[in-house]
Length: 555
Image: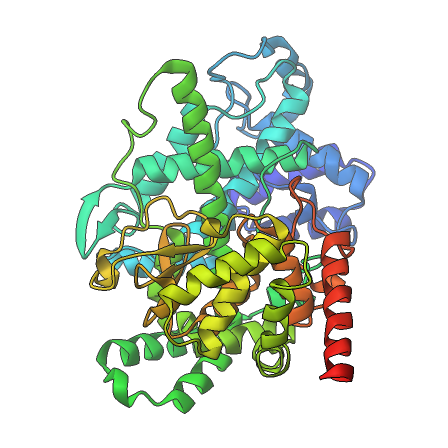
């Protein structure tokens, strides 16, 4: 026996697709009510989008007609009682209600389609709610993105019918969605810092929802928007199949277990007695989940940047404090990622991940450069280069600061001289802090771009180096080579830009790490990837190779 909803849905499909036979109507109705779509009420119908209806079920043109009817039939003021003799009224109602765009468009309503959201995500959130703890950030982001997908599709369909609608759904809609979400998950979405609840989390969720929705709408409408986390194809310098590899539910559950084991091991193990063989096995076996969490963190960073830019714009316009109506700020996305995967931010863990992502082992190339070319290149920079005099003076100054030149601090000396050779600012890359300052007390405010902080006022004699990005200490390295390699690896692993020293990093990529043109992350001042050798870099490489050839022949 049919339910009342099934009867009503059958009547709608018969009426809109009036040339379809009864068997076809039944297939459409069954598909709409199946787990693949999940419609259980007339309210759910307005969230159905064309991509949910395959051509094998209903022809694309007919699918659009059906979806448009669902959208109209579920508008406020329209009938949803099954009396479809009023279909003509539904068709004309949107025109009658159309008004010029206003700040608040009260005619558009949106209910969260819970039955159509990813079940894995909802199960995780339900579990967090039942145990009265904050959900994993990845689950929160996946919930938000899933809701936004339906919201954007629904609102774009609405705009086609409502002439004069405003560009975006508006604050009332974002607030309504936030209220619906927090009514269902008041505990698992609350803001928690150090185990203590510091806010209900609503303002932060609403802000992220707004930014994500408007970014998605700009993309769908072909407007320029902030860059999104790349899907792998076309991502420079990485193996496309390794950027965001597919992970099914059983694999995810297994890798979540490995993640928990790694965290427990990190919290309980003696750092001096770490079993790196065990760690490597668990890290390499959970690579897919790491990539998934990294992509989620990248989206969070981009949305935070977008929100900050919007807030700054509003501040300039209205002279108000952009954060005055927000909860306490949420933790940095990269900081949360590091807490979730602490071993990923050890030099060894980072190298394992990077090598699989890119298919390159940077350490091999760096060792070869330091063993066979470093000393000669320092001679070249102080004798035969365009900046030889300036670098000679720099070398004499550094000799007074450094009593013993080892291979690692010679590499740092080379980076200083290379920056001078290309006329770039080394202070963008290298920062210093007091040797006695605890790592937890180092002020990283303002270090938004990736950089290296030497744990000594004299970076050439520091005991360790901290690689930072987004104002977060990410990797602790014990030598200059380890720090520079970690910085390059992080740029690929986290899909972030180098410091604004394009010529220096182009040379480092090409000559020191042996990376091809197709692998580069170097960008010019306009933000375009440099896919050809810059003449100055090419000339430097050619001149140095000629210099080495002459040394080999004459010395």
